[in-house]
Length: 257
Image (tube, rainbow, N blue to C red; front, side, top):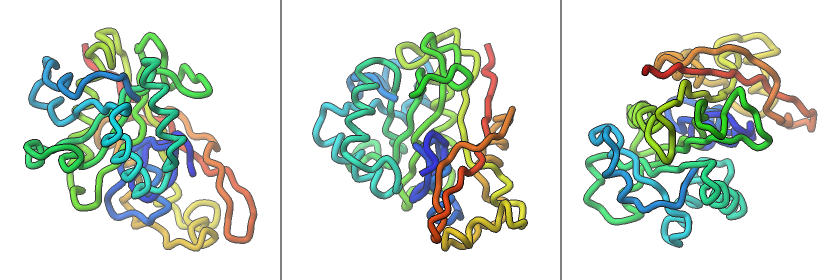
């Protein structure tokens, strides 16, 4: 549901970010969110050691890591089939997606998969291609598939996004020439506007409306991401079978030189 956005757990989007916080199961999917087949030790070679040690590259050719990612995607509720993980592995091998485990310091001493509190991705080519969101030359990169296990929520998502921003300038995942990071998320009006068109949709999904102030769009805005447009993008269906395309927000953050 809600393919391509950055959302939290149990929610929609072909994950673009944060599967945590006080959101309904459906809204939580909207959080936003790539991988090269490189050893986990790559986390040690970054010049941004303190921040990027939070992120360790995923190796989806390792059955243990494949199964753990599949388990976490099942908890998230979206992109949860083995075929989804296989498609990500293909993109990682092609160098258009870099995917990382989120490993907080308190878990760093544990073996796989126990140390993996969540995951996040950095994408350099969308499917289908969309150069507003990501470019193969890595001048623009897209955050996708952010998920934090429920027991580790409470600030870890923000730290993971900040760490990923530092990776955006580091080959082979990013590029020194990366100008911006983008993401998509459910439009904030579904959380903040009580009208039938916006907040009223939750009842038609059989869901309780999320708490005001909890929108994913606003969460990213507080980290410096700026919306440049909204447009219908997430195909959904109400309980009565009526189909709807929910509005997504396109956000962008310019990186410093």
